[in-house]
Image (tube, rainbow, N blue to C red; front, side, top):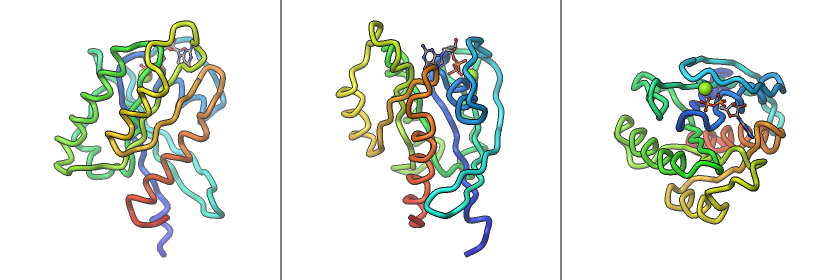
Length: 175
Ligand code: GDP
Ligand code: MG
């Protein structure tokens, strides 16, 4: 097995303001930042160990000028797993997640791709607009896992990226 088989490219997509950048920063640096940088797109690297294997994750944070982050068709070929994020406190971002998935399938030209659906901001309990059951139902329709996170309270962020690697491995027949 060659070493570069352990590179995994993760692309994080979803509506604006759902917490994509915050979740990534939380994972990389264990930081929470209140600020919002809507137009910044960036790529990061992090090594993680999973089941005694070392992975080099390349995480692409996406951003757009309008409500949806932009999926650069150039990502498509190199992407191992898509993380589609919405905010459980913002119904519209849940609808946007469906649009984002359709776009991914369009651009990839395949019927299914490795993805993980993420409901972020689970700490905003009083403001919840999307139930866990509803999100799980959508994930079933997408044939992908659902992870509920809070980047603010550092809930399930590590689990989200670990799950992403597992799904990427499964798609490669490499689990
Ligand atoms: P992006 O556009 O998806 O990258 O969203 P950002 O990461 O810029 O986050 C948008 C806003 O939501 C910022 O003010 C963050 O501090 C806030 N935010 C991100 N994650 C959470 C979370 O889990 N809970 C709460 N309450 N706020 C969050
Ligand atoms: Mg962002």
